[in-house]
Length: 133
Image 1 (cartoon, helix red, strand yellow):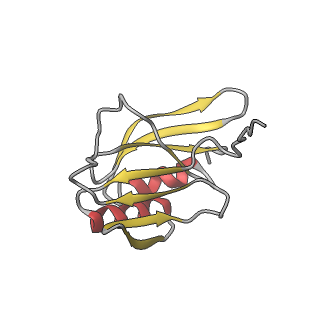
Image 2: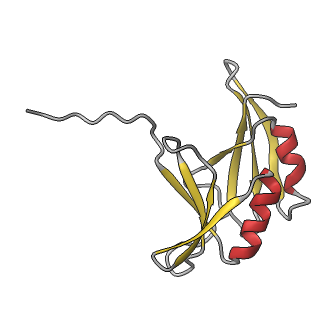
């Protein structure tokens, strides 16, 4: 008998590297207007984004030996949820210490809007929202 696994979601977990863990956590809490849960996992400090049990989860991770921030933008792109509106989230990026990177892009077929920013650690991260304003 062959067992076939079916995924309920494609992305299971993501990690955003930080060199200055406290600074990165402050930035993401301010920029996304949401608290992060601080943990130590395997001796590594993490700040976990709130998520439902079955939803994709992720964390800010301080592991400079194995993971370093990258601003090149030519690797994997992670998009964070920017609900309720993309503009409200973008408005918090620079006051929190980040930098907006490029323009807002309207996606086809009413998929919503995306934009990118550079966080305090130098990572290039995407934002997605169904609503601009």
